[in-house]
Image 1 (tube, rainbow, N blue to C red):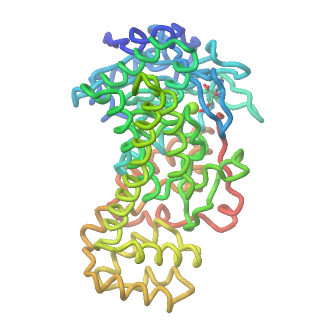
Image 2 (cartoon, protein in one colour):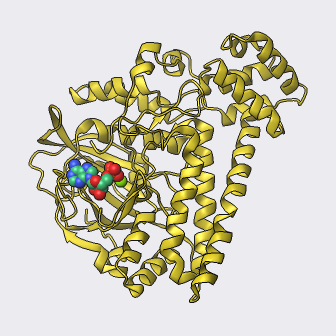
Image 3 (tube, helix red, strand yellow):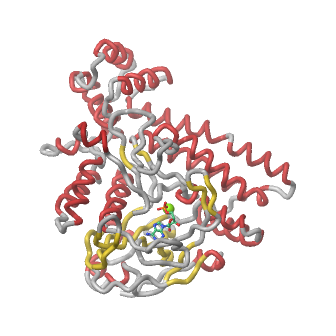
Length: 466
Ligand code: AMP
Ligand code: MG
């Protein structure tokens, strides 16, 4: 099978696309393949499983390493770029739109700095599980096509097996891509990059209209994260897309007990990217995007700044609306802000598992309140809240369509990864099966709907860039 990939990005901004070959993989072995996604992309799963392995690790044709900059934890790096990743090119999806086919863990590139360019099996399987769970939860995200082990050893704290992730995205245009272009001082480059982004994501829009749409898409995205309890963990500007898709599943995790200060990332000492800070950070990142795009908004700088400020000002309204719409769907009623805030205060004070609560609340809408009540110590508090909520006439069917039974719980993800790294892929495939049908409760799967043991959660940390 010969695959024809386009190279729109590389043609539009060759200065930001370094032609590069993936490291040769002597012994590729398929660990997991996303057959439905392969078919949507016109790729034959049977071929991918057999003769297509060299294609999946980038050994069939060269790709490009993309240049980008980024604010990491608030500090600006003018040159990051794909240090261990390659864009193979774009493919036409069944929906008619282009998708990037991108590899992670494919060897050092000119952007690698001190890194080895490699990725270990565990973190690549982690991205696969989390991104496919997010997709099933209806959250815009990059997708995972396959994880292929390379047979090479990756040296971390201990020697680990290497892998390449093939991922698919609306595009890999990041806030940091625009920061990079702007920072070169080459106005024509910035304009070509923006023209490419407009053509790809918002055909016919002006630059300002595109920015307004990115603001709306990011506000909606972060609201959706919060509504499923997702913590991205490393919302640097190089990890934020123009497409509004979640990208770069590093130290991300799902919150269990509701607490806005929850952080799992081992490097986020100050809680910059804590659950409850995510809207503020998204808005901060969008301000960095606006700065990069300023010369395209208006020739006069004061006028450009005024337009950017006005557009940025729409973030909060978009976020609040998306969050309240989502909360009303989760509660099955037209709740007001006070009802939602009172509930969150109760969840917080009683250390209640976020996902379990909303799932059990649907049962309460059907008349059996005990499973939800039993999550609280403050029974008087939750009873008073439940009666206010019940008076609004909750729609149990709607709640069951909205509130997942299963999310990729951290202890189960870690279990599946540990087994996968030692060659047993069955826990991974069971977990994938569960989290990719998150709304339908199935007998025998109670284990997957149960929070981690206390001692696990108390010490759980996630790691970045591994
Ligand atoms: P991240 O925080 O994972 O989004 O990565 C930040 C930057 O570090 C990007 O420029 C990556 O390409 C680069 N990077 C992360 N890990 C490696 C690695 N093992 N080798 C080379 N570059 C890496
Ligand atoms: Mg990144």
